[in-house]
Length: 301
Image 1 (cartoon, one colour):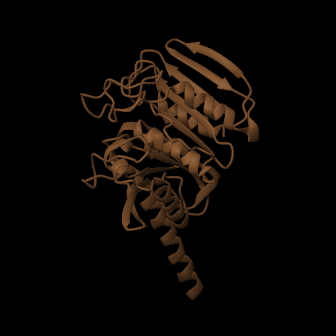
Image 2 (cartoon, helix red, strand yellow; image 1 turned 90 degrees about the horizontal axis):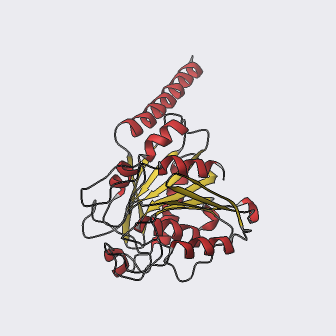
Image 3 (cartoon, one colour; image 1 turned 90 degrees about the vertical axis):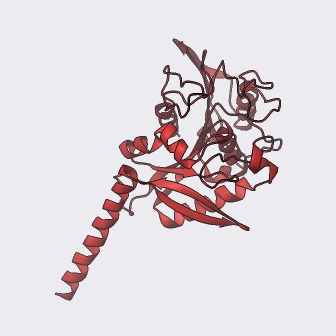
């Protein structure tokens, strides 16, 4: 009888955990905190209904853009909805700033604002976040990915440059490879999505008319060529166009990695297919759903 009660109790606990996981996606995300030196940092987590705490699931880190926040990235990308459907954990790191929940930025060396000015150690934060995430949840460490837009895209590059041993692939939307000393420890698959009419981080480089940080941005081609060289990719293996969407795929690359570029002709500084968070921001292109594109790329790697 005692064993039966213990078994029933264990079953009830498992059911509660599964129910909590469902509510984390359906209602509010879980909020977690980590300490990095003297700073307390935070991030949001959405667990899919498939999460049971036993089977390890993939995780996708989504870095918000400059002036945004974890909650805005969640709304903009709808990555949690994708995670619920596909069975992965969506994670939204929180940048830093004077305010705790909005108008936040990341330190990506040449950008942006508060985080850059205070020289926030973002690599240490991401490493601490991953440690906490893996301790708290069942994470498939071979399938941890990062993506982000704008200043958040710079953070995805930073993750690949400094923590390549912990990320399998990244996807950068309207971002720039800013780091002057990027030396990934191993090949990382990279997808780049960028609009040709981006006025914040111009496709061909230079100072954007709408730039958050007034520095001469590197071109999209610079980033693609850098990762092709680092991943040991051959010349372009596939080059095609579908309406206003042009795709370039390079390979084969070392260690089964890949480098892909998706250019949206006439596209602005936005998350294609995502939500428009404010009227002053560029309208998202409808030629492509970046969230679908990114997850498809991740599943191939």
